[in-house]
Image (tube, rainbow, N blue to C red; front, top):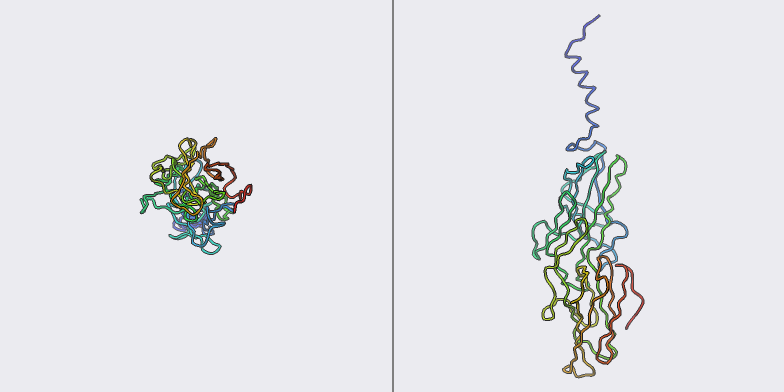
Amino acid sequence: MKRIPATLLWASSLLLLLPAASCTDTLGGDPDTDARAITFTPAAETRAAVETDFPDGSSFSVWGWYGRDSQITNNVFDSETVTKSGEAWTYGGGNRYWIAGMTYNFYGVYPVYPQTSNDNGTTATVDNNGKINVTNFDCSKTGEEAVDLMTATHTRTYDGTNANAVNMPFQHELARVKVSVESNGATVDDLKVYGVGYQGNFNSGNTPKWTEIVTATEEKTPLSGTTELDMLLLPATDLTNAKLKATYHYGNDASATRTDEASLAIAGGWIAGKQYHYKVSIVAGKLTITVTVVDWNEEDTSVKWE
């Protein structure tokens, strides 16, 4: 029998091993050569606060970790900005690719906030346990300038085939509060909402929680308008101090103003993702309020005032 040289045996063994190694996924390894890029999109039912849909240029931040079983500790996205361009949502920094057999946890925050303070002092961070923190969030803008805050989580185990875009199911973390006035002949000079928080810190935790840090007062409140107010405010279970103050006059004498106020307190308070429509009627120098509660995007058609 002819003896096979040891060097040939070693080379043959190496060739047998190479194909197996090229298909092996490791927690810190590269994706397979046929891997697909990870892509994102908001879930179909998601709507921004003022727009009926996300306009071109809209962005959200995404964080992500992957691993096996309970060891999902490998970072793949760290506050990456995902931006709408036409019908696509894209991110920078080069594509990240799915790795078969790995479980991925993704977390999103809309709109984009840096991990270090921006001009308004707002920050957004997520740790690998999935706890979302947004600090110094400001609700002082109203109407079309009002700023929404939404968060999303998505978990997927990649089996090598389900590489569809990650549909981020964003949920509103604020309450939408609308005030409209039927003046009945009075001219409304000013509406003010006070006794409610308009700046706070958000922590998703096991149960989402807001901590109020700035409260609107009667003397100083950014929540003001004339015949209508559309606000995105911190959820609150205790609205004991929440007030609406109206200044108005009758006829042509704008100096003969009257002032009245009414409570905005309702049972259960304001819940994130709900819309509260306060309909105010001024009759004989008195404010009368009725409140309807609907889902965020549902149009309240119970009363239409001109």
